[in-house]
Image (cartoon, rainbow, N blue to C red; front, side, top):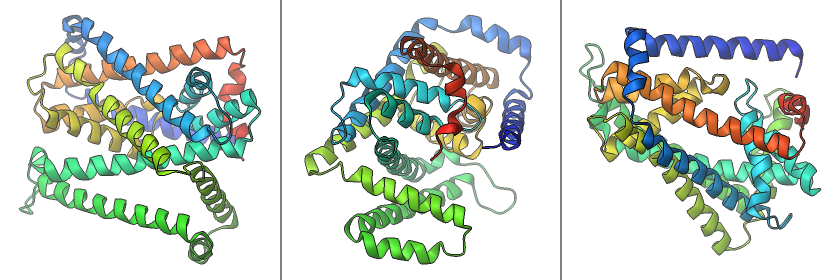
Length: 345
């Protein structure tokens, strides 16, 4: 990646962060926001932190299962590449997965492509479960989005219901595609080649690379038992991530502490972080919290802004502090971590 491209990504990311922060903080008196931090019951940050750490432990457990055909590694041995890789995801280029595969391969003498393949499979599990969560939440709790859309007679609830159904269809299409790719690989790859033929050569090569890595990673799931274990741990990790926000509901004494509010917050936040990528998720994270808690559930605007700041800060500190610990523990170079694009295959 050229220096100019890096600079352009950084500028775009900062612009997104500034715009999202402006949206979050407009109409919020900064004095009231600062004062809100004094009223937080910080004792609830302890269980919230424990749940965040637990989610990383579960992630390491399921990654270990996929790595078994390559290398039998203890769960503790995966923390360094995983957490340093998560730090890489805070950078503008968001190349943490490449960094994680590189660090694991270097530490255990495993081919980069093999390690990356297992990470791609984990991301597919994450995508499937996220789409399932989005579809369920938007269909089951469409009423949470009930507010008029102009003079059209429609409400956001109607749109949410339609979006949930579209997401369910997309999930079905992904699963069907994955099935044909795994069971009829040659024919499916030939079809992909025809569909992608109009694209530039570089894009076709990247798509081909990702397809082959995906297939390589899925070959690790040789038995239904292993597949079920990875799927079960993926579901557990998603649940822990969703409920990691719940202690903060009590820290701020939110009026609505329902499961509906928690699921809508998780879904809206996930979608906003995808649509509005920003360095370290700054701004986009707070905007997602503001939309969910204030716009949809009517929580006080100052409270929603403060909640977003504290929740973001807690997640950021866990990733950075644990990542820095492993950088120094493994004697890694900070310069090496920043130059994540150097590991782009």
